[in-house]
Length: 288
Image (cartoon, rainbow, N blue to C red):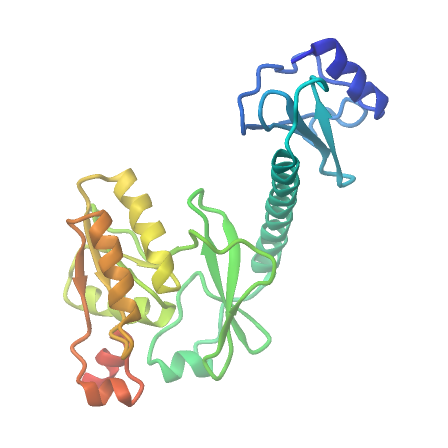
């Protein structure tokens, strides 16, 4: 990078670089740094290296996003410009998701514990969990990222319909319902399914962590994360036994990636599945 040229470019837009600014930024890496015109604790400014000649510079606080080209004599293809625009859009999306996540965390902290007589809890024959909150008639289910922070929220209504918070990141969301003393894990889709499974393992004194992954396609993200953390962990997917076999299909995809994964399905008959039963919550309640 032409350091003098880059410094002049930053100055021309009314900014100053901090004294410890790192000019050796690798390709595709994004660096956040302080706007020295403001509080030193801020990290409002950012730059991303596209290809060691084209960089994108921005300011989170104002929404500014501009291109910096180190050597204008280099031939730049239109596809590179398109890539730059895609990078800008992705950076903006990620920042908006971060802001949304922070706002959701504030909302969650303000809410009371869910009513144990909420219609959904009664219908599913499950108790409330210490992490579940309530907003008006909705259950509020926190969905955590791998760093342990809330990244989105699942709302469950009285009739059982569900939706995730608009504009927040979902991929990789999970909810551990308990913590075992060993490296044994059960992964399932829904909150009600997880609560029913946890009730059974407590009753049978089984030491295992139950993790809600929220849908079948997201299970692979959570299992891979746990496998990376504990490469000798016992990994069990308690998949939904849908008529269309979506739950089983996605569970098998996980098993193809990590062969030691074990898959369990609720032993439902075709008649039961046609009647709408599909998961372990349905099966456990049906047995009763």
